[in-house]
Image (cartoon, rainbow, N blue to C red; front, side, top):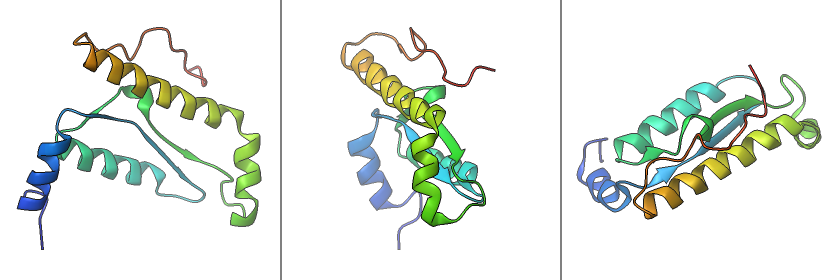
Length: 116
């Protein structure tokens, strides 16, 4: 059995260290935020880094609705689809910036689909 600091994690972390990630977690009842945070913490513990603030999202789709109709709810939720695209774009920009040796370009030219 390997722990978070065990040899398996060190080997995997060594190969993945410095890479960027984006996370999109969805749920229909509860727990999406906890799952996103757990996955993010795990990836960071292996020395990966988030592509940026818009590259980690958790959303509820079809909240408390039957699973059978959740795909229809996703198809109708244009804001979630836009957020997934934004996360992908932010990841692509971060990877390109990292490969080019430049600074993090995660905030340049991207507009959040859900304005606060």
